[in-house]
Amino acid sequence: MGQFPLTLSRFITQSQATHPGGTGEFSSLLAQIGLVGKLIAQDLRRAGLISILGTTGEINVQGEPVKKLDEIANEIFLKVFRHGGLVCALASEEMEKPVLLPENWPQAKYLLLFDPLDGSSNTDCNMPLGAIFSVVMAPRKDRMPTEDDLVRKGTEQVAAGYLLYGSSTMLVYTVGQGAHGFTLEPEIGEYLLSHEQLHIPARGKVYGVNEGNYHKWATGTKKYVDYLKFQDKATGRPYSGRYSGCLVADVHRILLGGGLYLYPGEMDRPDGKLRLLYEANPLAWVVEQAGGRASTGTMRILDVEAKNLHQRVPLIIGSANDVRDAEKFIQGICEP
Ligand code: AFP
Image (tube, rainbow, N blue to C red):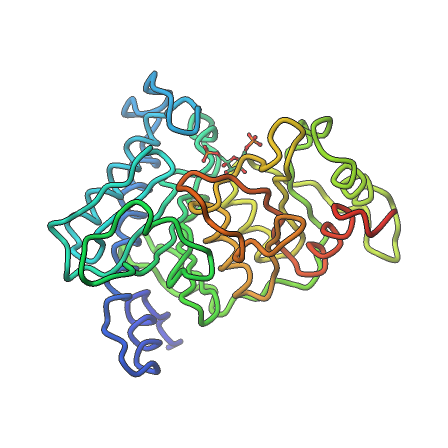
């Protein structure tokens, strides 16, 4: 009989055993993320049948219409972590202000930032969706964390990753020892190790970007995307365009097969659309841990100074050599 695949909790326990001082708390924290994933996936599977598609009529802090499923997913994160006892403050892309959990303090030492439902325009058409999470430590033991304590640089993350709701549900995470992927086995309700030590190829043949925004891009970005489409067998061009409207799904494809995803700055939106704390930082860390690169076009994402909870940032992420090429075009160092 073949070897039975490792479950998420067993994999984390084994990894922790190699780290003196490991308390087992990460194992519980990631198990709670896994539980969130199961609960949200369950709702998504039946969404068309139980009147939870469409919008709530509200506009969120990002100025976007709130989908019913955005709200449901956000509530699931809050419920699971409020009762989980490991987190004492949470911030979400969907909420203007963080939720502080004094009832979990001082024993809870983690702070959680999350995008509860990434790609929510995909909800009504049965396309992939995701969730993204980032964990940092509460900086002080002598007082409850404040909003400012959640606003941290990407290099300060202690765990990060995403849930992908596609043809299967996956959890991909890093705690700084590589990036690993688990697939939910629905029959037994367990996440099983399916992608150990992910490694992104140094170069790919796929690019993902919303080209409808082409006219708003800076010249360097336009030149780079034109370059990707230009035929040149020696450098493997043209690249194939793949864009789902769900960052998690697009980055996951690139993590497995190489290439790059871009959400660049635009004329009227120089920092682009994506959020530093809920989207760019956690995905940047996962991709770097898999050997890739994540950049604003001019600097490493993980080194960007975080100034506020809902800060936006241009994101170019994927295979190291592809991202380097994009940086050269954006910085005007390279011409086609
Ligand atoms: P939501 O998380 O608000 O649904 O936004 C999705 C997203 O942040 C990311 O998942 C997509 O790649 C990107 O926005 C799509 O944006 P455009 O519709 O502007 O291409």
